[in-house]
Length: 529
Image (tube, rainbow, N blue to C red; front, side, top):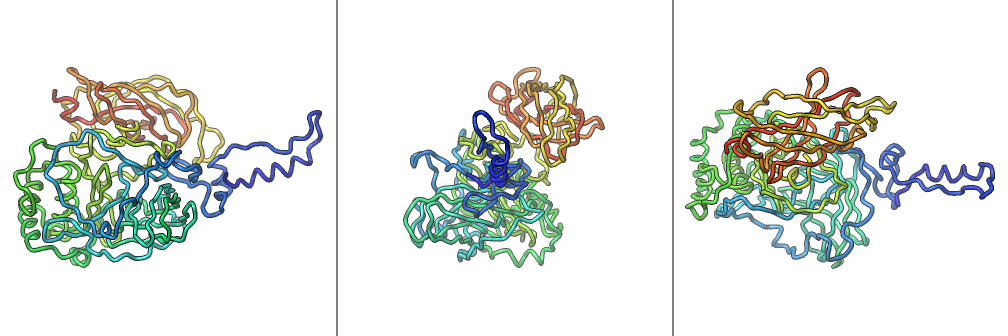
């Protein structure tokens, strides 16, 4: 139970009210309210962390009940961890086909699915395996406060502690900080990190514990432009590469037209644009390993998330850009550093379906807008999550129109609204849309109340003149009376072209009338039938 100061005020005042036939009411149950907790600065029962945090996904309560009702239902980190796991390397494989389904666990609130940061590699060895360049473990400090430009999270995970052994645990992103950490049952422990920002916990007792964290991380880590650093400044942070790797990468970079003749920011953008154009392939590469496999993957542009991330990192390190491959059990992506900030960059290539239990009260982290464009038909990690849970990032559409009405509440708090009314609206093509598109997308909702920050249910179907748009992304957008668009999120269609899910209304949305529009990007999946 969290501490609510208001409860105790009400209890004290109850003694002063008149007596009634049934006697005075000494106690009144007040259900937990995260917004009240935040407003009053309430803490969890043990006083170690705030009872609620304000995120762009809503005001969210601290973890209370443990995840998993039994040991059999708990996903635990560590388990078979040994000191060798700290030095783990990553050898790329030759299976470039797209997996049908992957399992995933997300211990963060709001969820960062599918970007839980579990393994990161920032160097390359003689065998063309990605490694951690600086394996020395350093203390991960616990304490401090969230900053105005931070995104905040709770972590709630189980860890199998091995006495004196660093056990790997996940984080939400590069440069995250731990404000509070507690273990249940209590034990002595410390958190550590290596040079690639992999996280570990070291305890003094062999047991499974529940680790509850309060985290903060600069919001720009999830999506912001690469800085204006020079090549000389970046070179100081790039580990040395084996000669064979440098020679192979030089040939690849020359073939794709990227060099240090471009400013670092432009070179990084060109790398992202190139490696996002990869596609899965059932035809395995001819090369088996080493420089030949790297070059074939990079130049043939085939493979899923891990292949494009691997080839990107080898190319970027050779070019002189600090880069990492980051992965978990479901997805892989890259991080690049401009000397001041590590930036998460998704290159796409996710599986067809992600299988996971939602542990975060259906709240998904809402990162900043992607600073890089997606080529037509590309599918991001965010689309993978949208397909699995109905959250989310064109076709023309019919739409419903909700209205946000004034309620006297400040803009940062929910405002009630009347039920949506039906209307129809077509969006102009966005950059990258194919003008040949003749897709039709319907959208409807039966919501009778809308609130800022609340999730808004929409459903519909996407189709072409010939067939349905199966497994395609559907963007949900609000358009106001002035014609400005407010992107709400993305959903994904099933094999029948149907989509059904919820998107969140922005906290800063002005009161007024809006049209809801659904649209799909032009892609081979949606109109080249």
